[in-house]
Image (cartoon, rainbow, N blue to C red):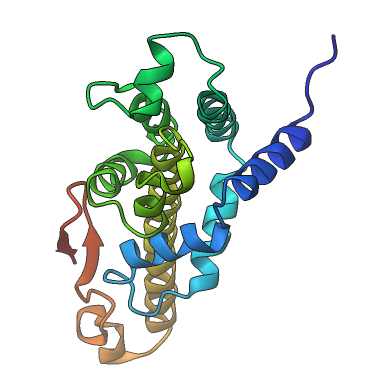
Length: 208
């Protein structure tokens, strides 16, 4: 039996999300809401590209395919009892949906983990729509998987923008070093300015 090509898996993920009513732009809206307070100049396109990037990760792709498949089977009442009823009712003590989704965010660090917890509790944007089970649909796994996508994309942006800030600060420092006299005083030039920083608990601190 031949292995499934990664492109086939990725295409299946995109198709399944579309079929289940999850637009990538809706996920990007959540990412923007999570990060705009830390980066006022953040562009929506950056959020969308980050969503697309994290959806290229196999761990997340596999989780999405498994979760959506279980939701669909439950809608068709093809699961055996008592699992059929547990998933259909999104039983409060049933933690397998969160466990599946949470497992795919660990690669993006503590920011992703804490953001996932926040989204799971607050049900931001399309996550709330999925959680309401409108139209008789079952999204027991999908709402948590969307939390996972958005949390991973948010953390990816936080780390990349911080790297960009530090790279730009380093370039400014090199340019100042080429100037004579007092211009070499980087503390007066703003190179050591306080930079807002996101930490694991979702709060904001500062690093100089």
